[in-house]
Image (cartoon, rainbow, N blue to C red; front, side, top):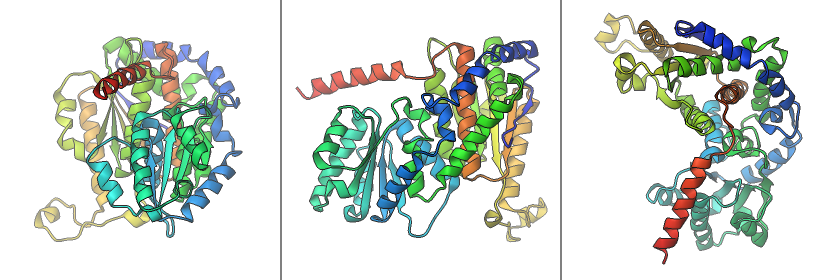
Amino acid sequence: MPITWTYENFNTFDPNENSRLLKKLESALPEFVNKSNDPNQPVLSLPSTDEDLAEIQSHSDRIASNCKEVLVIGVGGSSLGSQALIQACNKVIENRPKIHFADNLCPTNFPQLLASLDPKHTHILAISKSGNTLEVLVQLSIILEWLDKSKCKYNEHLTAITGNQKSPLSELITKHNIPWLEHINLLGGRFSILSNVGMLPAAIAGIKVDEVRGGAQDVINSMKNASNSAKVQSAIGAAHLVSQLYKKSINVSVLFLYSEKLRKFGEWYCQLWAESLGKNGVGTTPIVANGPLDQHSQLQLYMEGPRDKSYSFITVGSDADTKVTIPNKIDMLKNVGISGLTMNDIVNAMSEGTLHAISETGQPVRHLHIKKLDERTIGQLFMHFFLETKFASALLNVNPYGQPGVERGKVITREFLKKMNN
């Protein structure tokens, strides 16, 4: 199995507690295996199906053949997963549209983005499970006026992914005969990357979405074949992280990523971990550090600050076409023996140096190295963290689905908007 972590300093805290938690997960393991075979549990069973891929590919071909740019509007899980996937695969394919994401309501950036696009050659993909997402409806209203000014027909320049229920978005779809795909009702946004929510933008970009699902299924198969929870990498990770929380109040989880192709993956992970586990007074705070950059901003805190953190390092190998050799142009580089090495060599040395420096402080560090980042390996990463989050939720006794705190904020926001409009 490609995803295997190496751990340092984790067992110095309380190996007995870690073993106790892994034993507790023995009861959860059969449940998770059963869910991976149940179509009504799409978080775990979706990777094994291909029934919806023909519809996704059909819409992808229709959109890609009729535009030069695609603008995806969606918030949180409706956008982060596909952004992470497209950035990780980093494919530039001839004759495929350029994908843009408007995932935040910004009165400066959004008009500037629209001004940079030609509506006659742009397709809009609007994603909202409820069809009521305020940010999406605001952006969509502005976009419709933008399309009107260029006399563009809505049903030729707009596609939607939404739930099969009455909503402002579904009413717009019906009124203007807009093409749409049904958002799986049993999937929350942050768990939707392997559904049409993540697969359609990726397919438009030319990504092999069947390989993404295949990678996710690799992780599911590994779990199914495991004799016990101590053989499941995601269960091991969850037990380690939760045991530290219980025994040492280590309540900050730092994900240190040494690849620019994983930046958006880090944002996706933060939403998944925080929104799934931060309930009932428990949970840990996810932080993303991007190496080597954040060695110059966050590392001082990690080395000499409070001992309330654990660290997960992910490093990535170098493809043949990305090996940039350092030329002999600066004397200092010659003196320290850097000239002739590749940029990837430098990044690897920095990641190893940082990992070992933190480890020397006695803090818990784990490391995953991915030889090649492609559709299959990013699919494995998505599913690993899905499972790790679900195992952690079982140990923390929280429901990983739903976000009642977020919903309360939405209610109060609408109350303020009503007052402003009076």
